[in-house]
Image (cartoon, rainbow, N blue to C red; front, side, top):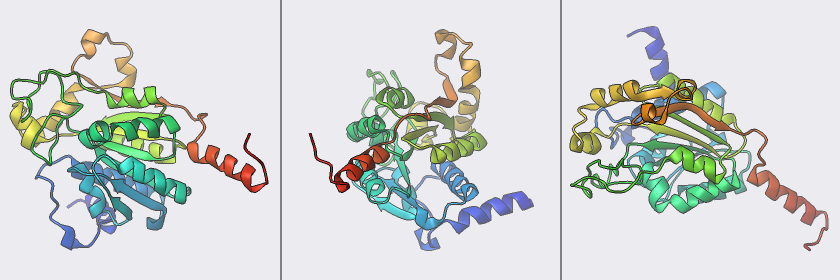
Length: 284
């Protein structure tokens, strides 16, 4: 094995919990492992200590990731990861709080928490792994299942319009929004690093494969075929800005889609209120 690959493996193993947690619950070929590796390398390159990081998740395939990562972690109720993460950030404002979630967990039952975390612009980094379906609970359609796509709850094709997580986050007030895919791992890794360093609510949407349900039901092939399709259908932001809506149909625009470094962060604003009260100030 080449030296570089061995070094990467050593870095990943360094941040995993004891081997008794493995093998993981993920299907062979699942994109979740690629995202976990990118997250680990991003944290390692930034030099964060284990106790400086807290990973929070709800329920779903993607939400099992904190179980495997050797950081402070919370595995919480379905859709409630951002609510718990908000509490962690309030209690420990200097901690790097990372939410790992899926399209169903974040945007269906957790949709309200997602919108208001964006609105507050609280300093939480959210990695939303979007595989267009509920993978853990049986392949049901999710808020990001494309119109016309098949799932166990849409056997004749989905009649609903799909959510755009990045568009929703930006409209709701998130100050950092980016998208990548499990094929574009180096880009994803750099985007996660940028999101972690950004002060404010950061969303990194990662387009990933669920070949067990979405790929099988929509005849998209095995993991390799699905990941290659992300390569073929991804368009960098700069190029996308020169294309027409018809040309962009069915494509994934990837890159840093929005960044506002001037937006005020929620914990900082709340601390100002606390400082006024501690100084003897009165409410109006």
